[in-house]
Image (cartoon, rainbow over all chains, first blue to last red; front, side):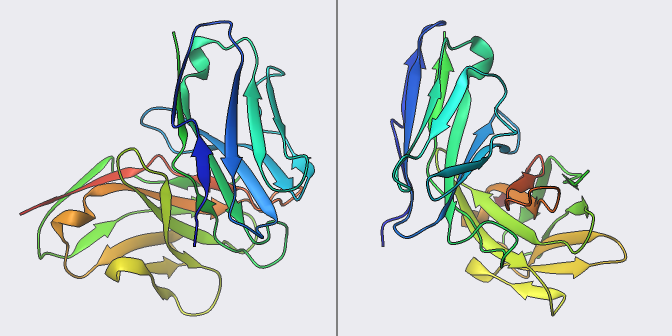
Length: 117
Length: 116
């Protein structure tokens, strides 16, 4: 079956531009996560959705970062007024359940590599 | 605070030899532990997980991992390495903190290089 897809795969933005990154999770997956992976580092949590509800946004680095999942499937991560330190790979992951229930594994998309010049 | 440590930036092994990639963790409560592999320009692929039960967990592509509670370790192993196993490996622990959304906390990653 289809896995998690993300678009675009690569994005170059000039400092100050707004960007929008899309994630299509696996059909039927309730939970959706966004992670940021800096070069040479492990992924770091940004935000979490259960269906359309954003239950945890504690990892968003600033108020320039905004995420939504209005219909409980596709999600968009938006970064306003991009800065050079925003350059990273943004990974989306989905799973069947995410809360304190059984710890299902997360399935990751290929990521969007954002370069801010 | 929960954390994961992968003490080796890189592990080199000859094809056909056994391999071990080390991981130690720090969590409050019962740990849920995962291993993922990342190939260049691709997302993370799930290898295996430990939830409860047997300390030796078997996963994809012949990999296994040994959970050791007393040493708070979850080392990834394979009896016979393949050149195609060369990739970046991440250990992760499920966050059990407040909110408990199931987010993963990752180690820094270990590059595995298998030479023919």
